[in-house]
Amino acid sequence: MSVLDSSEWFDGTKDLRLEKEQELIDALSRNYTSALIIDPENHCGLDTIPTRMPDRTFMTIDLATLTEGDFPAVSKKINGYIVDGQFAFSGLLLDNIDQIQAGADTEELQTLVWQALKRDNTELGGYETPLSRQVIPFDKMIVAARCHHFPDYLTDKHLTTYTLEF
Image (cartoon, rainbow, N blue to C red):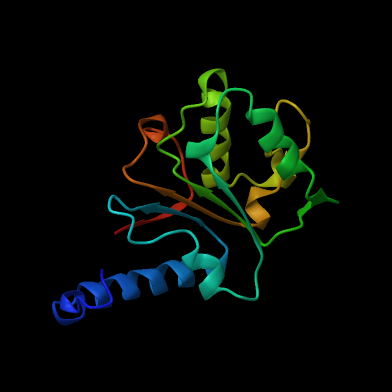
C-alpha cells in the first residue's frame, strides 16, 4: 500500500489486517501455542511481532536464505543461547518455512520447523538437534513461523499451532 493510496483504509482491508495482527500477538502472549502465519502476499512480516511485543526478545531465522551446509551453524546458534534448559530469547521466529532449499540440510531444517511448531514438553524428552544432543525448550518459548502456503512437509504432522491466514 502506497502512502498516497488510501483505498485499503476505506474498503476495510487494513482494519482486517490490523485485527489479525492483534489476534496473533494475543495468541503469542499467552505462550501456550506456537503460531503459523500463512501469508501469500507478505502482508504480515515477522518484524511485526517484536514491534508489537517490545518487552520480549526474539531470534529470527530466514530459512529461505539457508543453503547446504548451514544446518550445523543454525543448530549451533540456537543451542548457544540455551542455558540451564532455558532459551535466552523470549522466542524464535522462523521465516519462509515453505521455501527451504538447503540441499542435504533441507530435511533437518524441516524437522526443526516441525518440532518447533509441535512444542513437545522438554520434561518428557523434547527435540535434540543431531549435532548437539541438547534439548531445545520449544515449549518454554514463543514460536512463530511464517510461510506463503502451508508446507507439504507439515501435512499429517501433529502440531500445537494457532494458524492465522492473511
